Image (cartoon, rainbow, N blue to C red; front, side, top):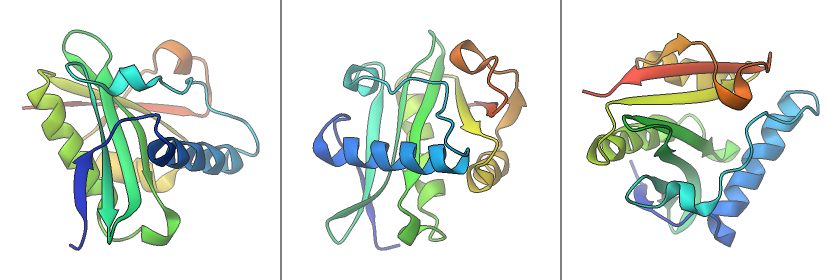
Length: 154
């Protein structure tokens, strides 16, 4: 694979641009309906409770994702995104695996996430990576577009 994955601060022009692109794509997929979860602030992804990772290829940011603290033992996966031109290269899985490793180092024993029902690529990635469906929580609990998952991190 010709890419590198490294931590980058969330909320910078680089990472905010990717988060905005993700939001625009998801809103379009859900026929103009935005998601239920608010955009997290940069502090959500800062140590010691979280991290935000970006994959680069030839100096270009092409994928990202972050983990933050949901509770004392649970990390929450947020803002996973691969630029459309770079899909199908295994980037999503690579970023996910790096984030799971980071979550373990942060002391989390499980990871939770929410994704939309109009995101078949994400649903396929998460289920193939061992995530199990769970009832949605918080801002996602009553959103019919939301699908929530959890995985034990051993």
